[in-house]
Length: 150
Image (tube, rainbow, N blue to C red; front, side):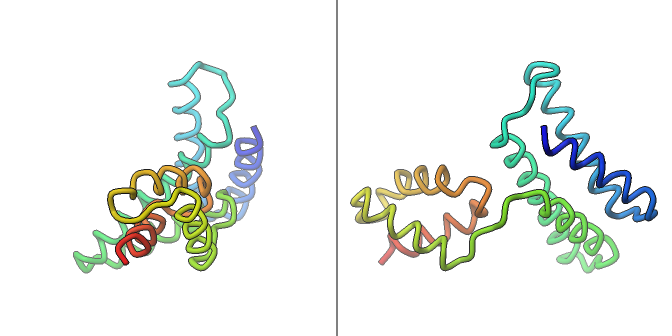
């Protein structure tokens, strides 16, 4: 598993640098990966798609927490959460730009012949599968709604 090997090296580097923020984020990743491995089948390797989903979930949790902290005027708590989200996001595949997402969604709409909001599920299913790990589900959903609403 490339993720765990890379993670171990990053953990060692963060320990040497005494970077507590990065260390905390890396430990969260390692913990989540190990929990997922033991929950599935013990020592079985996690498929790359599962690793990506796991990392996306961790990033989303951090961003959601930061948003809540900002709403409560707790910048002291929001800043570390955002920094951890950035550290975790570095392990994700490169994210698509909004323009690239729009182009892919337009192609899917043409391919499926979607004509309105009633076809959103069909478009979302294909879009989510095609852009798994490369785009945020919320962004995909927003763009699909805009395209089908017109």
